[in-house]
Image 1 (cartoon, each protein chain N blue to C red):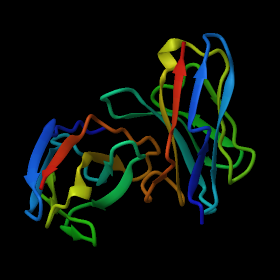
Image 2 (image 1 turned 60 degrees about the vertical axis):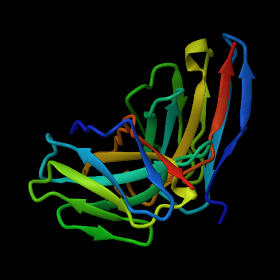
Image 3 (image 1 turned 45 degrees about the horizontal axis):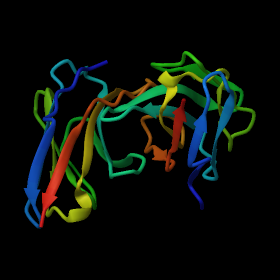
Image 4 (image 1 turned 90 degrees about the vertical axis):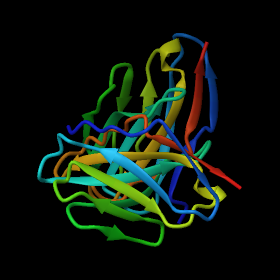
Length: 110
Length: 113
């Protein structure tokens, strides 16, 4: 499994963009990069995932470096509801064992 | 759809007691899994199932049993609870495998005295 490195914590102001980085230098060519987040006292929820090119959905954007050794989750306008722990998870296509690390705790200030 | 449901929400056990944590999903998902989350840490996979009748071990399976007799249900059994099993337990499901979007339940907070 690819090892990931994420900042322990980050802060953002409400309505400003947030860039959450993740290093996964040992990622293999077939590993998708998944992002989940966990709001306080809740189970994790899916945010976005991608393989090589940048991805967008209604929640966020995912920018993947050309060498795939890092990626960045982008929240375009942070809201108070976005305060959560964000997990970056490289996952091989036929692997059924998803490993969560410690993630990044995002604090959003009003 | 109710999504993924877990019961109970809270449970206190004494060391050595047994119990079953219930997990059910109504989305006809093939893949289901159990995670535990200790304070301040990420989730760790206990067991998973890729379909009815098929289960496999995850990262931390010791002390836990599972079975999958139906697509909908995936109970987690603690045969002899230990204080080290004090944790929050999350059940998840996805359409075919862990690479599909996983839907998590609200969790069961278990304390073993």
